[in-house]
Length: 93
Image 1 (spheres, rainbow, N blue to C red):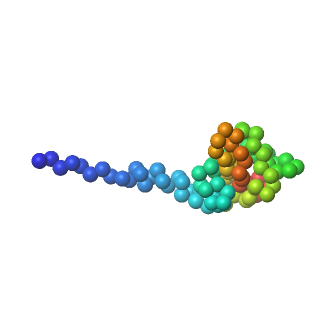
Image 2: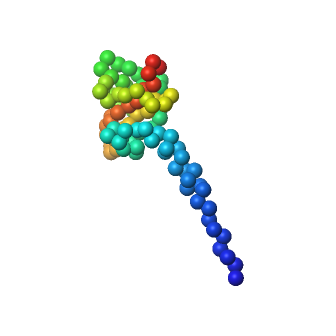
Image 3: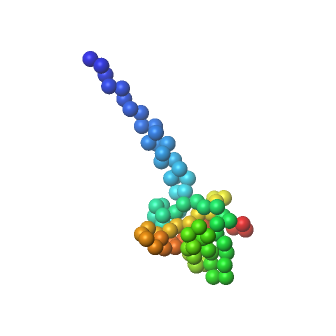
């Protein structure tokens, strides 16, 4: 009788690693589902906040926080409108 080879689940563990890289996203902001890294030059500071160039989203100053790493990030809500939730910018970019 042949024994069925065991499937190693290492691939499942590897897939989870990138999500852990941004585990600092605050749950109140985006619940770790709506945030993603972006190029900092795609976030342009305006008089009232920050403008995300690719989508046209505007983040008010109170929606913007310092990034916890060396990348900028945006958090956009789900649905057709993709409302601005929050953004994280690298200080002094």
